[in-house]
Length: 111
Length: 154
Image (cartoon, rainbow over all chains, first blue to last red; front, side):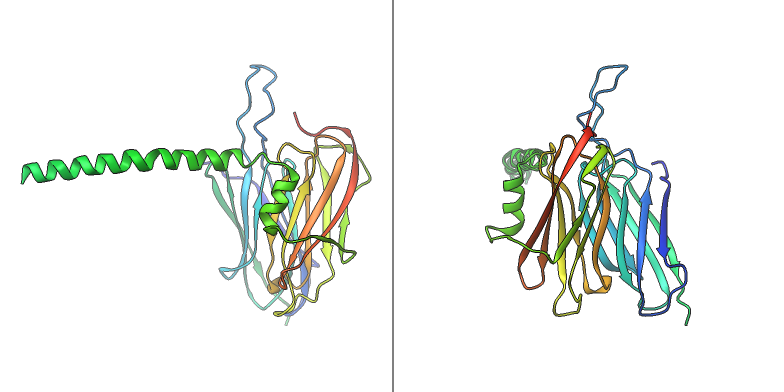
């Protein structure tokens, strides 16, 4: 189970409790559809895509997504989120080959 | 005692042989359901309820996408996102892809703003569609045509 590169960005950088901030989640993933042929061998490349993404704040779900292979390679997910206070924003993502990964970011509002 | 356990075992085998194929069939069903038309996919979500086109749903996508492999799609819904009135889910569809479904996004009032943005793959020129489910049980939609110069699949 290789570790995937992923990134969570919160915009703007400075925010207060109660602000609505933009959360950008990027992940490096091939997102194979299962319909593409390998040019060298001529065989179909098996489907490999993210099928579930969960955004949690202090282990409380904010947004859950069910996704399919129609998303682009290295997909980006952007949502908005109202900062309730200090805590940890966690993203758990699962793919159709059973790989489960997570990424977290500390939320520290100014006052 | 031996005979009893033997009969029990027989019963177990019979039970599993009945159950196992049905499990296999269920798995097949879910596998085939990834490839479905737009009408069927919509009906599965709405459960036969009517969909109204609404200008509350703002779908942003490029009119001409040079590369179908990466098409940014942004959906924003005018909603107060309070505990009583909020957007429950945003569904994104690419109407002519092999699998029309792109993402089902379940939102909560903790989001503060009904917004979702991602990047999709488009095989051919087609409509990108957003179906929005509100907490009142309404289904709103918006769609936009995207012309693709180079397909993103295959």
